[in-house]
Length: 75
View 1 (cartoon, one colour):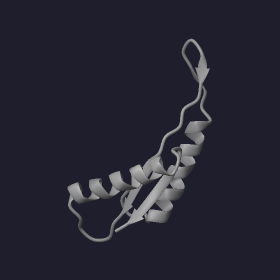
View 2 (tube, rainbow, N blue to C red; view 1 turned 180 degrees about the horizontal axis):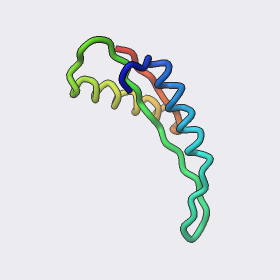
View 3 (cartoon, rainbow, N blue to C red; view 1 turned 90 degrees about the vertical axis):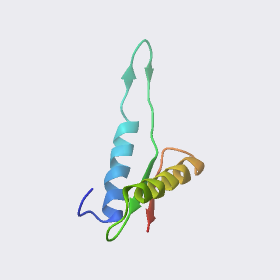
């Protein structure tokens, strides 16, 4: 998200995560699902590979904390 602070990205993704968890999926049965998200907040120029590594670490922190969470890492 260009021109977005880490905190704003966290707020937006957390709302998306919460709304997504409320959806009912219907196949043969009805079920709900959740997701976790990792956000890397950077300043200045950063290589895409570094940004991906930071976001990936944030995602694994969210999963380790119990899933269905959004974690922000500032670099």
